[in-house]
Image (cartoon, rainbow, N blue to C red; front, side, top):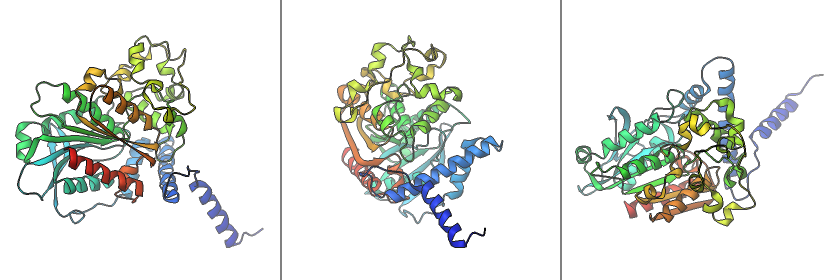
Length: 409
């Protein structure tokens, strides 16, 4: 039997459509654009996993190589008014963006930490590079984007320590003066894993009495803030959501914290935060208890998942699980009370939605002024993708943050 070109083409088209098509909630706009993006991400991940299985290197390194191949370098003409230089702050590579506008007075300063699950992304490439050029220009600001080390080369706490060192260096009187930055107008922001790092670094610096200049604002874009409950309502509701699934989130956390990857299935069931963990006192559990911290409309019909037994004493053998430098949501109220004015962005169709909402609530309860912005049609990654794929919700999110920074920094 011979297959006609038309039949073969039809079958291939049907197979491709089946692979690309992912049912999405009605509230999400530009569905086919998001489906194509998600299919691309899944394809890269599948290729990387296959290469790893065949012995051709770590899957993360393959994903980085493919991503870099797909990225197009941009030149100074993208935002002509911004000077871009690569520097080293306290031994950490950074890219510095300096706006050329203004009236000669002191400028705003911003420290930025990129997302990517503590394993992917770069301060110097792709969407993050474009975004920081725009932010520098729009805000007449000096933006410092930190190229912190990534998994698998390092694990926690190295990325955090890189970010803290670079931030402290920038906040020194000498460096702020060199860049003509007002020490009273310096902020920190980050998205996803970068939001985690921004929150943790902000907490540490707010507690450091030796620092003469500190952050006056923090902006956290769909931040990852805790690794003890992977069954929050948003993680169950969005477990198969595009861009970042629940299983991918858990894998990023397991890698970052140094757990054995063979434990992933148990971590998904919250066995790592079972009642067998003596260090998880009622006081600590209350800091990430979504039944106490989430509004009813986000709790919906879900119920907490607390295992009676499982991975006994793992919180003692893997102390990173309870380290506030890894999970800023676990900080006590006194620490939170000293955090700067905050902007917390969350998206409805994002596994990390509830982390951000819980942190905003805890900051507010601690007396910190908080602007909590929630996008009902938003999804994970939409903020940084606004400058590469023109998602409408992402463009609104970018414009809203720029406006808030103009008004508050």
